[in-house]
Structure formats: C-alpha cells, structure tokens
Image (cartoon, rainbow, N blue to C red; front, side, top):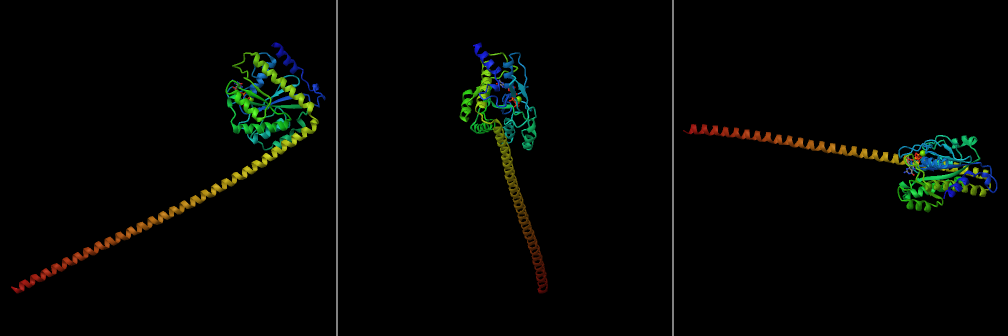
Length: 351
Ligand SMILES: Nc1nc2c(ncn2[C@@H]2O[C@H](COP(=O)(O)OP(=O)(O)OP(=O)(O)O)[C@@H](O)[C@H]2O)c(=O)[nH]1
Ligand SMILES: [Mg+2]
C-alpha cells in the first residue's frame, strides 16, 4: 500500500506545466484557490495538505481558528511544491452577490495575492482590478476549490445559491471547482455528497482535517489528501491541453468579472431604490396614521367639551328649577300666612 502513496507523491512532485501536450502555454504555477463559507475549514485543510506533504510534525501553518468561527482575513499563499501553491482566503459569512464579486475577481486571477480581503466593500472593486493589472502574474493558473463542512448540511435554498456560485466560478476559471468536504464524520456525508452531485459537481473529496487535537497520522487520510492533490495536477494538465488561447481566455474572464461586478452594482442600486421607495411609503403611512390619530383626538375632545357643556346647562337648569320651586314655596307660605292673618282678623271682628 505504501506503494500507492509513493506513486501519488511522485506524481505531485513531478508535476510541471511542461508536461502539457502543447507545452506550458505560458503557465508555470498552479494556485489552488480555496473559497467557501466562514469557518468551514479552509485554513485547516491547508494545514492538512502541508502536514501530509511535509510528513513532519503537525503545525498550524495557516492559523486555523481556535474556535469554530474561523478567522482568516487575508489571502495568503502556502507553497507546496515548486509549481503548486495553496491559497487561503477569508471565508464569507453568507452566500451573497456582494461578496462573490470579490471572489470571482480572485478566481479570475484579477487581484494580487497577499492582500487583505474586504468582502463588504464591493465598492471600488473595479478600481482595484485595474490597479492590480501590472502586479498579476499571468503565469499563475488558478484551480478553484470549494470547501464545505458536512456538519452544516445543505438545505435546498443553499443548494441553489451554491450551485450558481460554483457555475460562475467555473465560468471565471475555466474549471468546475473541486469540492472539498470537511468534518466528514460530523453529519450525513452521503446527503452532502448527493447534494453536491445534484449541483453538478463531479470531483468531490471528503476529509476529516488534521487538527492540533487530532493529528496522529492515518494512512487513509494521508492517501486521500495525496489523491486530491494529484487530481488537481491532472485537472490542470487537462485544462492546458484543451485551452486554445490562454491570453484571450484571460481577457474574456476579465470582461466577465467586470460585467458581473457592474451588473451587481446596478442591481444593488435598484435594490437601494426599491428600499428607499418602501421607506418613503412607510413614512407616508406613518404620517397619515398620525394625522388620523390627531383628528380622532380632536373629535374626542370636542365630544367631551359638548358633553361637559350639556351637563353644565342641565345643572344650571336644575338649579334654576330648584330656585323657582323655593320661591314658589316661599310665596305659597307667605300667601298662607297672609290669609291666616286675614282669617284671624275676620274672626276677631265677628266676635
Ligand atoms: N473535527 C474537525 N474539525 C475541523 C475540521 N476542519 C476544521 N476544523 C475546525 O474548525 C474550526 C474552523 O476551521 P478553520 O480552518 O479556521 O476554518 P476557515 O474556513 O479557515 O475559517 P475562515 O478563515 O474564517 O474562513 C477550527 O477550530 C478547526 O480546528 C474537520 O474536518 N474536522
Ligand atoms: Mg481560515
């Protein structure tokens, strides 16, 4: 079995673009560009590859996060052989078009290596692409590798987003991304594999990454990693054997990414306008409601005032009535007294 590992090793070791049927086509370096969501194990996968390749002690080369969230902020390179380099990347928080503009520019080899990755500021991406032109090595050949954790599972909505991300990545690089599944024993590997197959992925690899806590060398794991790397070299050779005009393809890719960024910016302007319209509408509704409430309050106040007034009038009327009654009683009393006095006089005269 050691034979198999040795064979894979020498395949990777001996890989050079000059093995291409039509020569190197101006390429001399394969960049294995990892991309994917935050904390899915990109840096750990680089550690795993370097650990297997160096075959020494485990080192946290790519500084995989101590916690589950991940932490890479910069696009850093890790040379494997003289011709193959692994490129780590900042993971994105969610699959969204803002972030993918940047990733497509990277995958199209339109941005320089070693720079900080700013997902949220899609603004200025075109300028950065233009400024990077002089720094880009046209001899670099990018192999896209999408890293996804089995632990996370794939729901149908995500599957749709990932599928379109992978397809765009394929358009930009000329290679359908290789899929690296991590955390392979932490969830349903079969379901995740099936989900990626449904998206159209053909090369799917599954790993349990070597980590600081889990780094005792396992032959199976070593072999899987080497198989992955040798697959990358085969993919590259196939691609350069079948590519007609690398320079023209590069130009087309750049145009594609620039169009993508342009469309995305236009879309986000449209979204912004729609949001503003909704905000205006909500504000108008709120004003209308306030107005109605004020009217309602006024109506209530007037009602209350009218009731008060009515009550006051009634009270006044009642009091007037009482006063009248009292006066009448007083008069009656007086009349009685008078007639009594009269009677008294009369009686006195009659006697
Ligand atoms: N058990 C297990 N743990 C893993 C595996 N891959 C990564 N981890 C752990 O998951 C955490 C995140 O891994 P990272 O490699 O930092 O993830 P990342 O994709 O580089 O994250 P960002 O750089 O933020 O995008 C770390 O604690 C790793 O040790 C795996 O296959 N199995
Ligand atoms: Mg990382």
